[in-house]
Amino acid sequence: MRSVLRTLFLIAFLTSCTSESVMRPDVDIGVQTSALVPPAPMAQTLRAPLDEPLSTPVEPDYAPGSPLTVEESAPADQLISRPVPASLSRLVNPFGFGKGNPSGMPTAEVACRKELKRLGVKWRDLAPINDGGVCNIPYPVEVSGLPGRATLKPAATLNCEMALTFSRWVKHELQPAARVRYWSSVDTITQASAYSCRRMVGNGSGKMSEHAKGNAIDVAKIELNNGKDILVRKKGFFAFRERGLLNTVRADGCTYFSTVLGPGYNKAHADHFHFDIMERRSGYKACK
Image (tube, rainbow, N blue to C red; front, side):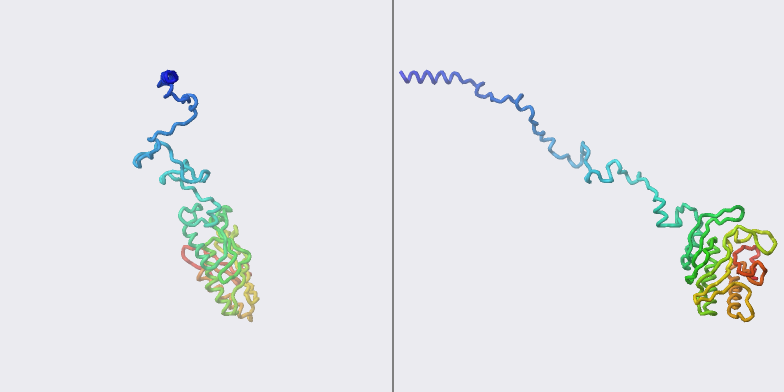
């Protein structure tokens, strides 16, 4: 009897289990796993071939926030050359010399300044002077120091050609003459007039002076390093050395200047030497 009952129970249990109840999971994938991200397809994880462009932009390999950005980069032929700031240009090249010179300074003016520097002259460039008529200097210089460490007092405003001529005369004539006669070099030259918009004095012509062009300078006194002061004026009979130095100044000056006028010429030049580089058609030089 018991074996019959076991057999009936086993048959009833087996008949209650179907394929649907065994294969169906307890979790509803469509509801309980909807927030999960499915893995990327294998095709998207592979790197593109080297000969095919990437479909998405590539991030730059420098740190974000650096001065250079992708938008600022440009082909070499599209780059814009930015001008150098004016302040930096003046620091490196104070006078604007060279190619592309914004001031338009002529080559002769540039060369003149280089020669002043070579001679050891102390000078500075000034703004153009234009006082009307012939009273003008397009590229004036203010000279304060001369060859041989001599000082020019007060500083003289001249055109560069006159400044260079005067400096050469000081170096090659005045300084050697002072050493020969006084065994001393020139310390200071006192000038009475450089640039000045005025007419000639003492000849009654009424013509404009070479001073009006920055072409002239008047020397009133020469001071030596040994303390000797030589005033430019007519000397007495016994002032041999002073008279000899002034005569040398007058004679040697005519090698450099077109005009040298001094004591003994007229009353207007009784207390100074006048030097200028006036251009005369005949090439005549006035040394008086």
